[in-house]
Length: 226
Image 1: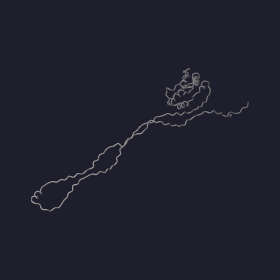
Image 2: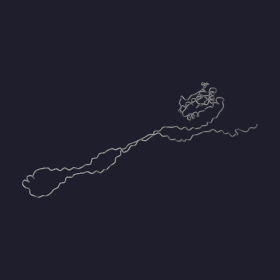
Image 3: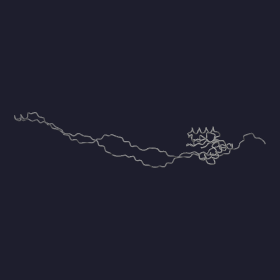
Image 4: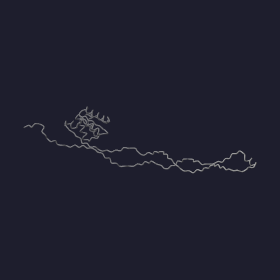
């Protein structure tokens, strides 16, 4: 982007505004008459059409204009900054012509791509539940049986009968014993695969056209007779 100013002070203000708007200070250059004949080639290298580059170079070298050239990532924003100032057309600096300007502007839609990370996560959780399982247990019981008897003992039988002794009868019973065994019942796996999808981006772009209209003549002063 280039802008032609009438004096260096105005050019310095434009340069300061561009830097304040985010342009790299090294990418905003001011050219004056000292640039000489090589200015046209410099402007061509910066992307200006050759005939237009020669015209701007003459406006600087011969017409005494000051040229501000800037390279910016956000061209629309930098152009809006330049348009806040009174820019000159090369013809004004060369021939003193008064030129009024209007710009034709058209927006281009550029669609880029940006990576976004997402996916799925496996999270294990433990749940407890009550489980009932029947079991049959065997158990022995010791029963006491008493009988009433009435018969006579002989002296020898009586001697044998009267003695101290202990009689035991052991009974067994089963008790439930609980143990747990872990078993794998399933598995969930995450697998990544690359796919492509096509998406149409719709956006509104603006365009500004310049139309030329003829102004109808109207009386601007008193009528005079010849």
